[in-house]
Amino acid sequence: ILKEGKVAFGTCICSFSPNLVELAGYCGFDFCRIDNEHAWRQDNMLEHMMRAGVIGDIVPLVRIDKDNPYLIRKVLEIGAGGIIIPDIENSEEVKRIVNAAKFPPYGIRGYSSLCFSGGYGTKGGKDWIKWSNEETLVGVMIEDPEAVENINSIMSVEGLDFVLFGPSDYSISIGFPAPKKNDPKVQDAIKRTIESANKHRKYVMIGVGSPWDEEAKKYINLGCKMIEIGHDYSVLGQIWRKILKEIKEK
Image (cartoon, rainbow, N blue to C red):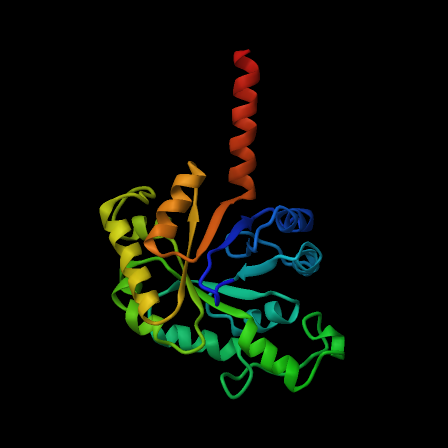
């Protein structure tokens, strides 16, 4: 989808439910971001979510903690279609992430196909290495002014595929007491990020909220190629509140 210049649509799963990963795929989403930065799951549920991605024909992108190269390898081994690393400030950090995510000659990821991604040894060898290096996505988050100042050097790193702009953290980092996505300063940073991505043939991902269609159209028109439509908590919460309000009023 991305290579064809089209827009990929996704959502975020915070609840660690494999069923919702499947459902997102059945609904037609191209990807889902599974959040393991603010969530705290240290069990095998993430592996089940990867299997659900295969069943639902949806690409799972996993956000994991910064500065842990072993998590990058492990997440890719259990079947993630890509990784997202938060709180990036400069190109050196991005190079280390790419290094951990790619097999030689592009990185130093250790080899073992005895995992879900490698078909437990049935898909190993040069074809699987080539596929892993070419098809799994490497993404980082742009969340503060230093990252925006370094955006061109960040985007120039070979092996980086996309960035996820985090307007909430960016808003707070520039002094707002709470997220303020539509402030001109935040919007300018988003536009600057998109311009750099286009220059370096990378992609920008951004989350949109209600009104969903208007927000999505706005950022697609700006040049975002990966649109994340809410997350399970926000979508369900909004629908529940709306339904309950309508029932009580009647």
